[in-house]
Image (cartoon, rainbow, N blue to C red; front, top):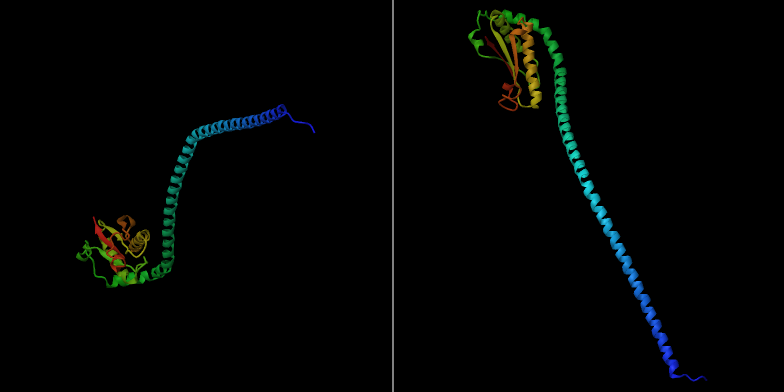
Length: 242
């Protein structure tokens, strides 16, 4: 048994206090180091934000220029599409005209065979014409057509033959041949149809001896139509002029 004195107890207490103090210092140093690391991280983050802001500021004009170029390109594409759409519509009209010409071509060939007979019959039955246009021809002569057709019907042949002979007897006069169409088709198709009708009448007049220089062609499509499918609109008007 070794007796413990008061001095020994005092020394032990001092040792414990010193160790607690050292532990507290270590904890404090650890917190200081942590704060220092956090401060360095904040500095690095701030530097990164500044660099990002500078990059955004530098690239903003390039982005604006790219957007402007894209807008101009989009405008060009829209204009190109509108042009191509117009070309497609014109091709559709041309295709419809070819279809109409094909459908009506054979009847025109057959009528060419009968024109000589019609001319002879017209000369045999038509009254003699004076040297100037008769009162009945002062007004426009009308030639009517079937829907979707520019073929001159057989019953119109005597009228055109008499009109051609009248023109031959009045060489100082010219003829204005105006084609029309109703509103049953596309406006561009109707305009083409009115032109083909006027050309068909002009061709028959030339076959009867009227020179082309005396014939003035006009075609108005459906711009003067009275109704959508009015038969009176599918016509050609022929009138004399000085």
